[in-house]
Image (tube, rainbow, N blue to C red; front, side, top):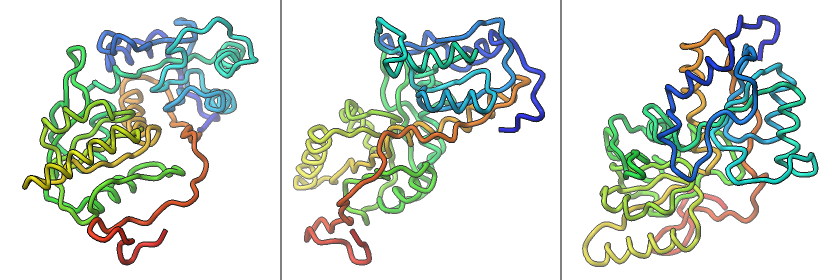
Amino acid sequence: MNVSTPQAGVPLADVVAALEELYPPETAQSWDRVGLVAGDPEQTVRRILLAVDPTLEVVREAVREGADLVVTHHPLLLRGIHSVATTSAKGATITELVVNDVALYCAHTNADVADPGVGQALAAACGLAATEALTISEEQELGRVGELAEPVTLRALAERLGDALPATAGGVRVSGDPEALVRRVAVLGGAGDGEFAAVRRAGADVYVTADLRHHPALEAREEARAAARAGGAATPYLIDAGHYASESLWLPGLRELLTSRLDVEVEISAVRTDPWDFVIGALAPQDPTTDHPVEGDRP
């Protein structure tokens, strides 16, 4: 971040107004907690730092770089707390914000359902142009589904997405025949294994989401294989892009939206808030007909 040529700045209230025009709080899911978490609406904001998660490391980065406001996707206080003592992670984060006069704003499910928002960013990374809602939740469009310009292999789609995502220890996990052709793609940033019924209704060849748990994912693939035995297709195939990675794609678009509306400097955090650091024992892709590694791949 360039700290030598600060912007003139605007009141925090103006930034909040711009964010709430882009992501109306009333469009957030009823269980969510979005909006201004810390800060004085009258304080001046010259620099904004964008991040997926409001971790202590992200806040410390904001302090080092002279940011006045941190905007994150995930809420800091989604569930109630009874202490902000520095003996807890949330308490230490809140204290760091307040002591250093750094504001915090969170746009979560209201950014998921926005247009443009998290869903469109993930869809674009997959190569989708025109999309429609995957499902409707609390009268809001959730997730996207659309068709690629041309069919591609499942492997090629996963590689395209992997090239667009920030590197993480877990990478991109895929379930399905790597050489199967896919065209209709459903996406849902963040945790999405509760929407398999919507994915099937949408007729998607592949579902791109994150945080796929063992049992829901296994059941979805077993049902797909049963459909194939009955003469259908073994779809939907699954791509788990990682929670942090899939939602980080939203940040560049948010930076453009804010800089076009406000006299502020906006940067994206360099902190990788994905919780995993390394992986051991990953398998090479398997040939679904032989259970042997696909030729040319290595564990």
